[in-house]
Length: 368
Image (cartoon, rainbow, N blue to C red):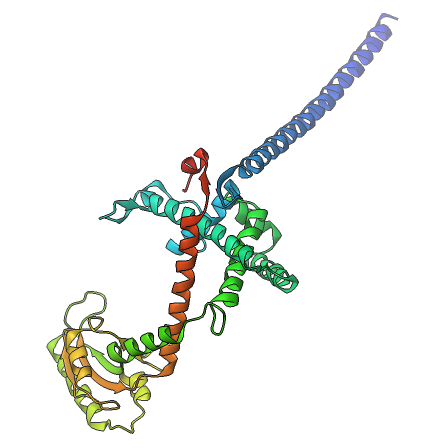
């Protein structure tokens, strides 16, 4: 009887132990699951808070131009533009050493100050463009917005998709809205120029402007092509060996003996010239006094149009120069350059007359 009771008690004890172990396992699993869920919730809430704070902070106004407000997000988008112009399109954060690098010793401007100045300048230009467009009833049409949409899709595809685009915005501490605004301003800039300053438009060059530019072009510019055989090491800038120099001299003389006014000078350049063999013709060089080596300028000035020089030795090698007639193609580029300068002058004038309000937060924005 006693033995049976003991066995019964032992069985009950084992059952209770198993129940306890199983309960412990269940509670342990639940605890782990709850801990993971809690950690996940904390992470999501933290990340959402960071995004929300950045989103709210990004909407803070930092500068206004003629009543048009620009936010921190806008500033960061224009900062990215400044970084791209100084470095490349993949640049995001910059180390302190780079920011402290002096770019202009005389003006004592380092990278950080340059980026601040450039960003502020671009924001003011954006405001001026909006004013010029408004004053002249110029606005983007449906087709322009369709182009903007297509360009944005192409940019997102280039980055690698929508997630990569959001990462791009995050890395640059900006927003999609700011991205759209700067793209719109760029499109508006081109539209204003083409509507007012392009050839044949109301603010195009006057006949006197063109006459002065053409006179300056014909008086001051010279157009040449050259075959150059280099006698210095391109990396060390030191003279090559006397033996190689002599070989170059003999080759230059041989080339010159083959040339005449009817020779295909571009073909000789492509075949022999050390400074143009990887390029494609034409190989024209336009210059004003003081822009080339003096010996080359003096040689070119003594040549008649279509005349070819003898072999000329400079500190960099042997040269054979052909003087070419000036052409309207380069003159057209000079006209276009003057139109663009006139447009930039008009923008500058608008900025000078603009009402610009810079908030205290503007000067404390990070540019790293």
